[in-house]
Image (cartoon, rainbow, N blue to C red; front, side, top):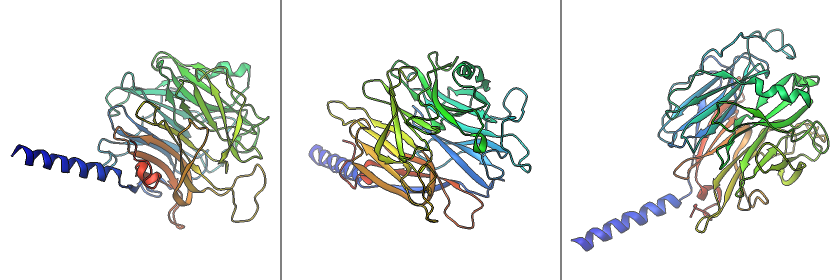
Length: 403
């Protein structure tokens, strides 16, 4: 009887292992354009909490455009994305709501712009940190200590950006968007970009920097400017960070440089002593936000893996491709590096059609999640936000299952 039971358990284990290694991919339309009173949903931000839940946020836009009336909303799942809570927001942010005088706002777009949600999972305390902006000129911070079920009353942290004015007289600020990182020391690091708002859409020219907290979000300080308006980048803006195996921080940056490649810079602490930005020839840049996320750290029995996603396309259907000008946002591609972002030997299309901003997260069970913009129907009033859930076996065509 004991032998028969042992054999049965062994067979169940082998079946479970085989199932876990089978390529898996599923997608769902999480925020549907035209539903909920919003014609479009943009700017995805995703986090897998230390306890294993998912929090997905985005900008819910009442009209199309960066300066439209926008609400930040988010949903929560504690079963790997099978079911989700009803959408909710942080409510009215504290202080007087006022429009940014630097905005390039259409006359028809009356209202307040809330923008650029950004999460950080705190693996030391179990907390979830959330930063949002208002009118691209104020920044707010809230935290959850119950796995994203509730959040603290937001507090304004715009004062953390004021010292930047000594180096760069900004009129527009924005976090991320997407997610920040936590260093082994516990430091929280948030990529940000700033603009003097003197160029088109009031988002150009621009520079990249970071803010950070060494006291679990209670206070925030500013780092050094990483990339300025020119040389070698042009109008660097949205960036994403990853902590490398040696504890340093790598920033992967969007810009309008003629090279049409993502750029990288590295700092020992995520705040100071950044290396001069360099282009990564493998990562094409259609001029769009991208995402970067660690899957695993290198260890005796585990390979180090880092994931990257962006719309990998340099063509334009209208045939008007010019250096430094935007290319069509489609062919959302997920890449995998085994060498701490030095090379990207794996690349697989996740969404071939119109697809733009994305944000990556990895669950406790090793499942990969990508929250992204996609316009599935020509008749849609704007983009929807989709969630893709897949494993390493799907990404690598069965060559890597995470062992």
